[in-house]
Length: 408
Image 1: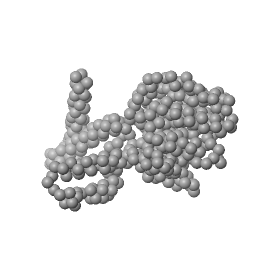
Image 2: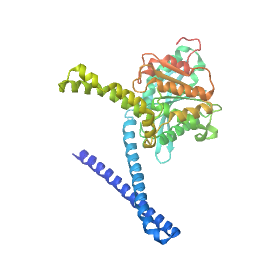
Image 3: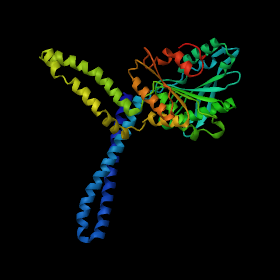
Image 4: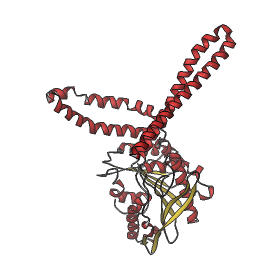
């Protein structure tokens, strides 16, 4: 009962905020209109003061009300976006910190990194490192429902793979597992800005812990691909000079999307594709119409064609309404121009984020870097959530953790 009452209070509070914004914007616009009318009347002559005020008062009031409505609508669109986009979880069991691995006579263990984030308190990340020297650091960014320790099965398989290589040089790779604000043991709320700030500080803490300059490589899956791309695009501005690697490394994007407006259209398409057949079957059962006649007038082809034609316009309209845009087009272009070697992997059967989005980003990186090699890899029979494990050998190859002569 108390939860229902809290929900009602939040709804009423939100409506009151919208009303206050609209009223304030209207009054402000009306005041501005009256001032402009009086000023113009004084300049043009007293006889037009009254008429000018009557014109500008409602005009500016209307513009103020529209501006207030847009701001309020965008605010609650952002709330809905955050509710759908982010699925934060907490780390309840820290027993994974006791895990160890033996690779080529070198022991790997997990170290906890604590670092202050302005306005959010102390955050935590995890450094999986060998007992000996480290020459490269892979930063792993998870999807919207992943925690840092969800990467451990991948790391376990990668370390077993390194052990099979029987090369001591391979046991010089460390992994940094990060959690976003609001995830794991971290406070705050996720957003492009807070994620960029938190992950940059986590990387800085890891580099200071390693106490030497190492090659920094980035791997992000789904939403994590966007988090990795924005860090690669701004690493020179964010990292202190003494922590910056000499050269940008590899940016490995796993099942990336283009941006959130494109994803909104994609999700709407999925819902329509799944809902329309069910609606078709339900109407066919209820209406006394023969199936051939009903199918003749069912506008499935028209809806598909109209949706395809309106898609660019809908994306354009969504851009100003989406606060957390996660624009991978811009981030990938800047990262490529900064010198990052960008590679994209995508599941061939990914129904959530189609592989065409990953291919678009790979082609953009290829053009920005002036490369001739194809930076896109499509993993057969892989969907969205299993592409990392199904394409494991390909990931190892692109991460430089396997012999160049090994077969894929």
